[in-house]
Image: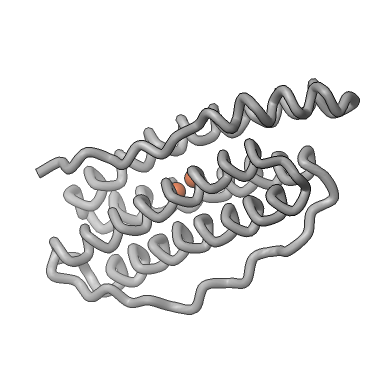
Length: 170
Ligand SMILES: [Fe+2]
Ligand SMILES: [Fe+2]
């Protein structure tokens, strides 16, 4: 069993992951509208990954006999100034999520909840990967920002990304 406070914190993180999916889907829609289908594809895959993160929290809550509580998901932005602006927003958002995960780990340690700490370590590693991959897209966009042909090259590269569903651990 997890404590009531821990249950609330895990439900809160599930909501944050759902918001991430919602935010990235909004960014995908912005890119579709900007005729950058590769960027849109990348954001769609990113949104699918965030859904799997949310489901990991869902499944863990169920596994621990805790109650899954679905709260309101905040409305994401609708417009961005440019692809550079979106890419900067993605990195800032991932850094924010890393902070949330770190806070959760601190809380698990405070509560001496080693099982939850162990569960969260997947996300500690995941956030390192997320910041790295998002950072490298941002770097490419920065380099391409002054030429539309550069941006189209990045677009066709990002079109290649496919969603790999996580393999079941059980
Ligand atoms: Fe996530
Ligand atoms: Fe993420």
